[in-house]
Image 1 (cartoon, rainbow, N blue to C red):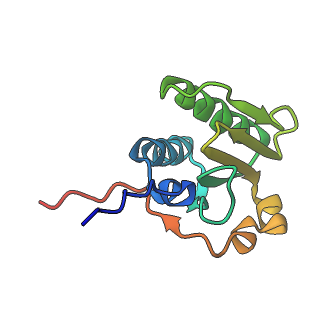
Image 2: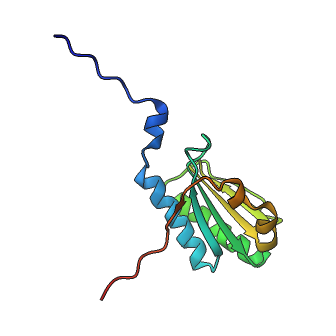
Image 3: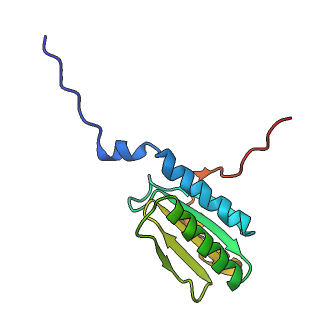
Length: 138
């Protein structure tokens, strides 16, 4: 009896597998934002909802200087993690900065704009990712 040849996994099935390096970079960018006192940091795993990226990282900040500091540090973090072709929009105005490194898009908002655009509601079907380190048990 002949056996059926194994089918190759579909592209969609292949995309469903979480790449641990990409997840680690998304979590790392959230931690960079936290180190600069970013607020309300959220990572959404959106690859099942759109095909252009895997994760959104959202951060709120209080003022232009803080937004620019967070953006510069995250961009440098992505470079250090080996990402190329990193694009940044809105840095000069610094009310909403977007950093796109391909599989991860970081949104850094002034607090009032984050509430106004409410991307969490728009992408509410996406699962969130825990990024905080769990405290060690003693």
